[in-house]
Image (cartoon, rainbow, N blue to C red; front, side):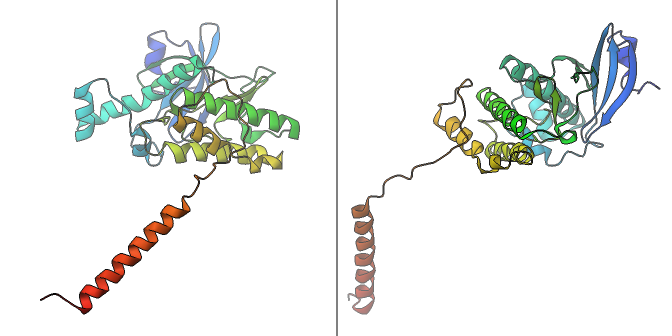
Length: 283
């Protein structure tokens, strides 16, 4: 195939040896299958901001820390340099997340490096050696759906324990290899502690994944993993190795009825006193 312009510098520098074919074009990147020596890899070519259709990017970038204060100031001002740095930050976020999650035991493609807006990483394969399918393209037995759903909930737990929320998780960005699900597409991953949108993003991630597996095992729709996960996170009791249950019951704090009645009485007395003052104003 004709070499895409963004991949030509990597060919020139010997980082890749051949571009085999285009795999897909998504909302934030195009992906190609390439050869690096004897290894077949993925090359993810990020689109620039003008082409990228990922919505509400600012919500995902909230809480991300820039090591360089100069870069951070430029990004805030929106200068040409700042926009360039914002793009670099968006791209490096996925590389950082992949390395961090792989170290935390989350199944993600192995990253090899990011060069001029091109991420080189492992090509996830199926049992026949072909490109692994997305969850959206396969059907599962009820038993496998229950097993893989539990695997995904534990993966989300490990992500959260590592301080990250995927932010855009669904059956369209999880691949299925012979061992099970592999999570992909992480440029929008958010800091669970620093991003004010982290909780609803986590809930949406869990709900999307649960809705998919519930197509094959309907009882999964009744689980409450998002509430369980966030409660553990907020309480500081998140252990990446614990087994989740999907059951959540937040016991309401016991109501002090006497205290409530006292407050009602005090408010009533104050209202009566106010009326008395209005009827008999002092001289």
